[in-house]
Image (cartoon, rainbow, N blue to C red; front, side):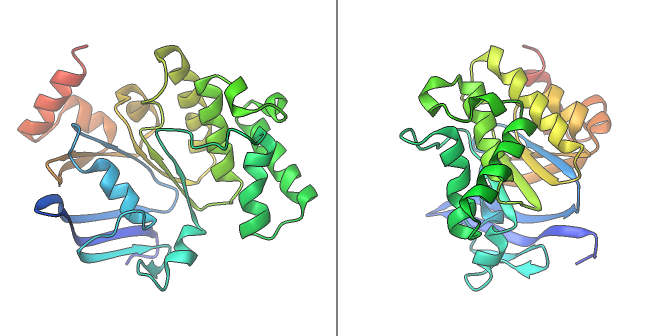
Amino acid sequence: MSENNIITFNNVDKWYGNYHALKNINLSISKGERLVICGPSGSGKSTLIRCINGLEQYNNGDITVAGHLLNNKELHTIRGQVGMVFQHFNLFPHMTVLDNLTLAPRRALKMSKIDAENLARKFLDRVHIGHQADKFPGQLSGGQQQRVAIARSLCMKPNILLFDEPTSALDPEMIREVLDVMKELADDGITMICVTHEMGFARQVADRVVFMDQGEIIEIAPPALLFDNPKHQRTQQFLENILSY
C-alpha cells in the first residue's frame, strides 16, 4: 500500500446469499481525499463503505484501513479511526443533544464529563447548532438532527468520515444546510467518503467521483471529467437520467 493511501480495497467480493453485491472491487483512497460514490440504487455503494468499518463483512479479497488489515483482530482499532453518518440520524430521543454527543467519548475514550462536554460544544459550534445543546432530538428539524449526527461522529476524533446518503431522509429545503456543513468539513483535511445522489455537491467538493453499477466500479475520475466527459456508456446514461430533473 502506498504511504499516502489510507484505505485500499484489493479484489474485494461481497455476496448476500446468491446475490453478488460487490464484484472484484479494487480502489485506493488517499489521506485527506474527498471521494464521492454515486450510482443507481442497488449498485453496491452503501455496501462498499459499510465494509470499511466492518458493518458489512466481505467474502473475498482484502481491505486495509489506516495501515491495518480489516479483520476481527483489528476491527476495534479501525473503528476508532472511522466515523460514520447514516441516512437516518440514530440519535437517542430520550437524551439531550449534548448527552448524545458525550456518551461515546466518555465510554469509549474514557474522557471526563467536563472534557467530553467541552469537545461536544466545540463540534456543535462547528456545525452551527451550539445553541441547541440542551434540546432533545425531537425538538430539532431533520437538518439540525443530521448536523448533530455529524458532530457526534467528529467527537470521536476520526481520521476518516463516511457518509451514507446523509441527505436522503431530509426534506429538500433542509438538504442545503447539511451539504453546506459537509463542504466546510471537507476543507479541514479529514478523509471523506460520501455516498450521495447530490451531483452538485460532488462537483463542488469531490477530488474524485466513483460511479458504480451492479456491484462494480464502472468509472473513476475527477468530477469535471466524469460529469462533462464520461467515458463509459453506462455512466453517460446514468448522468443523463439523474441530471435531466
